[in-house]
Length: 63
Picture (cartoon, rainbow, N blue to C red):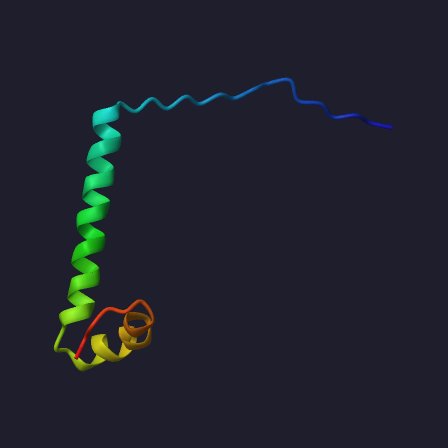
């Protein structure tokens, strides 16, 4: 009978400062708002049809 054991531990520590986390949150919020408003007010037929039901279910006016 053979027993395989691993005693090596790999630890990875990532440290991020508050400023880095806030920057990432602000950038993600701006990107999300741009995508929502692009899909909401786009005059491109394919974009309008792709997001149509989702917009109406969340009470976002599109027409």
